[in-house]
Amino acid sequence: MNLYKYVSDAINEKLGFTANLEIPRNREFGDFSTNAAMVGAKAANKNPRELAGEILPKLQELDFVESATIAGPGFINIKIKDEFILKNASAPKPMKKQKQLVLDMDYGAYNVAKSLHIGHLRTSIVGDTFNRISKFLGHKTFSWNHIGDWGKPMALVIAWIEKMHPELPYFRDDFVAGTDVDFDIDPMELNTYYPSASQFAKENPDFQTHAQMIKARFQDGHPGYFALYEKFLKISLETMNKTVKRLNILPFDYDLGERNAAKYLPDVEKILRAKNLIQESDGAEIIVVKRDSDTAPMPPYMWTDSRGADTYDSTDLAAVYCRKITDNPDKLIYFTDLRQGLHFEQLFRVSELAGICDYDRFEHIGYGTINGADGKPFKTRDGNAAGLDDILDIANDAVRVRVIESGKNLDDETVSIIALAAVKFNDLLHDVKSDYIFDPKQITNFEGRTGPYVLYTAVRLNSVLKRANSVNELSQYQMGHDERDLLIQVLDFERTIETAFENRATDMIANYAYDLCQLINTFYHNCPILRDDVDESIRAGRLYIARIARDTLATAIDLMGLKIPSEM
Ligand code: ARG
Image 1 (cartoon, rainbow, N blue to C red):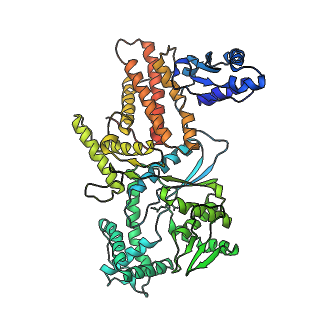
Image 2: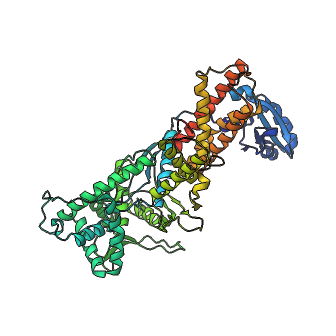
Image 3: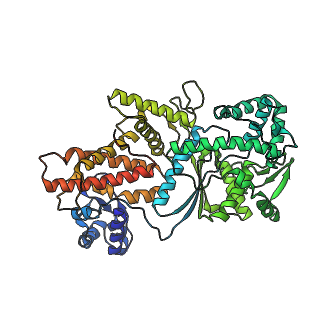
């Protein structure tokens, strides 16, 4: 149940107009507070306190109202009946939507032949959680891993291999597909090819030109380049899959990126030409997206570069076309670094100009950077920009240190579950758009607003419930305020998820989970459950509440893509 919505709707219906319902910071005087008397005062030609006095008896008729009292200039505080709370609090269940949205989500978007960087961490975590929330709310989602598998990096890697092994047959124009030779690429080494090649290209214009030539011919289907590409594509895809597993994110519905989109380029080009949108500019083909009302610079969209090759821009537009005919989504949502904002603004405009997809179906969720203590992008100890795996390894080490310090004995699997929770929870906790400082020590603390604290709370409840063996259905139970506060938070779960979805604010769910844990731990301390001196019927009631709390927390944990270890 969404308690807030239930109470708000019931009050509005009772009074016949729409008032605002607030959740007071301090629940001492009421669980909710309504401004109904202030809203209705004008129409009723009364002062708010006077009207509040008339409204009170009406509110008291509502089945869930324990008491309604006037506060200040005419606010009304409402306290909910204990029985109502106890009866309606339950474990959250996935919802069914009458108006189900079809959502295409573009996140992950890893690149072939380039190792995954920190930026890929945020797109994966936030995208995956948003996907899980959407599914939970009953929407239909399709996740697209828009792999970077068609551009300059491919050409640079091919050029680099050619430089090292010119004798290989792949570079010959008469190479026939299928006449492959024994040539293995070392997966560890593959990661070094792109950075080396790209550095070398900066210093050697000839090599740069050669790579550009390779790019154009590769995209035209050069059989030798393709055969080589297939080899490192396979290695890259394996690495990506390992990452998806390690991050515990849902498998992508489509691992289809630029290369797949390129198949649709001819169709898209036809549309663009028919609308006369493509213009020639210094050998390149561009689409003007600037509007008269623009105050910020709005460069044209690159349809082809000056060598006639496909671009990040063109394949992204083709990808929109592909998704439109594949899923026909209500919304296309992209999760990338904030710095790609301009690119997406251009893409959305071109899509609309071309009549491929309306501008208002698009959304770009841009995230900030993960920084070190110096406020600059996080670096590993050797001074290099940290990769995605580095971050997870560093968190793993930090958890292990804590475990040793505390004298606990936890296996590797558990340590890595905790480390992943530390990283993901901390990421979700921050407003997507903001940068944050990655502090391995702080995020792995077992206390405070951290992933380990959340997991620890769940493990603790699991252990109580396991030791209790069975939990009976609702019995007569006199709640104290610890149980009451806890169940009210449970009854706020649905509203939180709905609001997190509507506002695209995944941080709401992390903060909700933390608040829930605080209430669970207070309950745990103040309301002994299995202790010998606890009366049987009290124990039954507390176990019942503990189970609802655990199920709610477990659902939140799952929506964040974390796992609960069996011990901690
Ligand atoms: N592969 C790109 C990167 O690593 C992100 C792609 C995002 N998605 C898109 N449709 N452009 O930065």
